[in-house]
Each structure stands twice: as C-alpha cells, then as structure tokens.
Image (cartoon, rainbow, N blue to C red):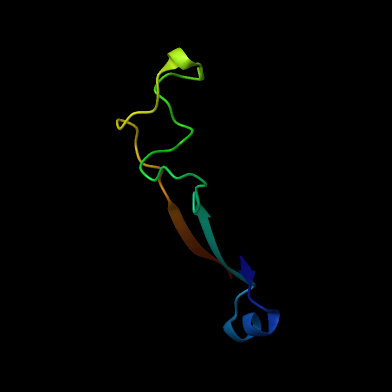
Length: 72
C-alpha cells in the first residue's frame, strides 16, 4: 500500500488517502498447473494406499485485488 503525502492531501481537503494492491496464489512452485498440489480427495492420508490427486479437483484460484481508502 501507499499513503499519499500530506502536501497532496492538503490541496484536496482529505485527511488521509491510501492506495493498495493485494494478491493470493500469484505463484505456485509445482509442475502441476491444473490442480492445487496440496489438494487431495483422500484427506490427510499420504500413504501408498491413499490414492492420488484426480482431475476432479478444482484449479488453484489466483486473486488480484486493489482499492483506495479515503478519509475526509
């Protein structure tokens, strides 16, 4: 985030202004690009008899967001 300087705020009549950007899951360290490598249909079991990830898992969502907070 970035807070606008007081000199800029005085000219506009605002007490405060902040601009921000946010993101989730921007990079995944895995060669699997179609599912979340931590997702499994078999709970926490990781043994040989637990099965494997399948194509029924949802893709790993990537989220971008941003906003402005202004105080008068």
